[in-house]
Image (tube, rainbow, N blue to C red; front, side):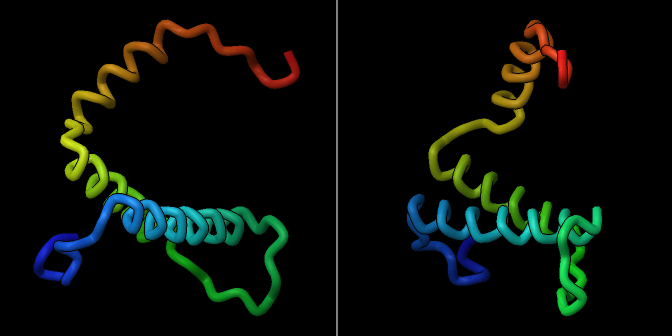
Amino acid sequence: MGVERGFEDTTIPELFMYLSEEVGELAKAARQLTKMHTDSNSDKMEIDRELADVFSYVVDIANLLGVDMEEAFKEKEEINNKRVWNKKGA
């Protein structure tokens, strides 16, 4: 987000609030995409833009906390790849 948008003084708790709001918008967009309990008055939302908003806030939080997201993602994927996952209904 940064200076160019006026977010240079945004705190981590504030970023979490913004992130929570965007996750809600992403959920609404996903419901609309899958036609899950939507009303006829709902505005169509673009799921790709909502995902980008969520990603942007996650990256902002990671940067403020000094987390290398690429490295963290790789490490977590190594852990997940070794896990045994139970299938639904199993």
